[in-house]
Image 1 (cartoon, rainbow over the protein chains, first blue to last red):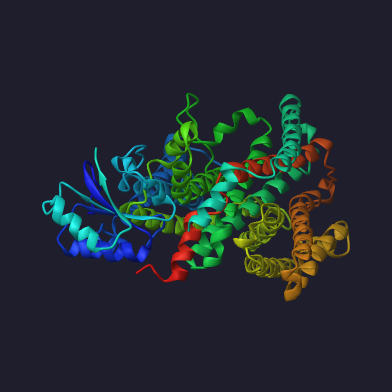
Image 2 (image 1 turned 180 degrees about the horizontal axis):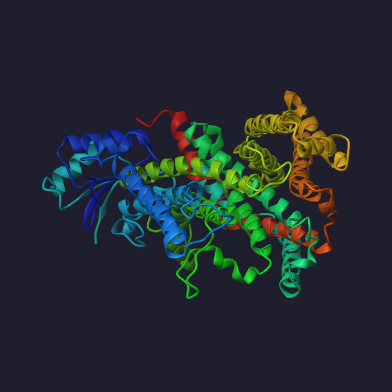
Length: 181
Length: 435
């Protein structure tokens, strides 16, 4: 998984998406693991350039689970409520009128799956989290506008104040920031 | 990229045309006031203040409900279905169309609740363990409706909000002081890390898929309110398809009605190009032709079934009791539509706006025809009757327009109305510098 800086870090700033992706690849090829990239826009190749990208299966699997659980519970509940707990005879139709129960069950599949997806996206993206150390970086507000950032944490086993900086300078960023916490 | 950010955040941070906005909001607020008065009187005097009774127990409140829900469907078509089809041209109008969906759901959901007769017990529709130890009647379309529309509202909100988060972060990073704190709370700590983008994108696509399945089900369930009931003209299997097509049709025209003036008002010409408007017009044409086929199928089935009551309904539509209304609907929804075959008409915003208004009125009248005409002419002539909407019916309808306008005005004033992230995405793709 890409690792965001929790303490001090070196952060390189770029002005183009391609430069960020190329720089990320170089840094990861050099063996760094405490690396994360920031961009104002979704970039197709960025996540695969980072070390150990997250699996694509997690959110869909959770959605399937949530949907089946939501729909299954709703279907069972309707059957139980209409045929067991409160036997309701409407026009002589069977108490367990399962075809009619499909509709609320279907809606609950969608509802539960959607809420699962929404919450999973937040949780896996480390949200909600109103503050984060990276916000202390001067100029980071442009990460939501037109600038691209690449961070290397000091916790990285390969981190060396001099050599890491040299490597980042080789990537020709606009500027290299030091993040102090 | 910074030009996009500056322009779109500018509408929220430093609004131009404040006076015009205030005047518009003032008019909309008057509409909301009318709505409050109408609802207040309904609460005091009961549902009888509307022109409903026997045999017409569903008046324009229900036809307006069907119409409003339909308006919402176009927003989901643009935000979810066109996303899955990789129609990039949807990006500039996506956020706006989705806001329209949310507000239309609010306007629609209000009607059936007010129509309950005893609206204070609306929560009896929700299954909860009560001291009365009873449960809702799960075979009833009214309960299905509650689930369908409730889910539609929640999922549309989640989908809209998820897409909004990166833009809220942009607002946060451009604001100072107390405003920055509010935006920061709303942005939930978005920082644009590759991990966040990855999960965000995947979740957004998944929600689009779920919303697509949902949107088709919602108007189908609304149509079950009718199709499950034994009345001539209602008890038909064509209803779900017919309703969904009509929903997209009226919704797309509503989008044009909102988008064309807004584009002129805010000078959105750099974002919403003539091409976008023309593509919307084409979607109107497609949805309209589907709806026209629905009219044809309705007539055909009525005649082919040969059942006395359905033949009587076809006759009543074509030559009898409801012929004036029926032919107005056909003229507006099928006749007027044919103008959209002409490319020059599709590119002329004035012409397009007028056609959209005409069709949307036609769609409202169509809902009126479906709801009221069948109730007026049931199986037994002894049970026939007439319906006249009262001033309180019209006041509620007028008020719902006020509510819709007020919410849309709040939206364009306080929320980035074009998705900045999706505009940036178009830029990155055009540059080909995504690596």
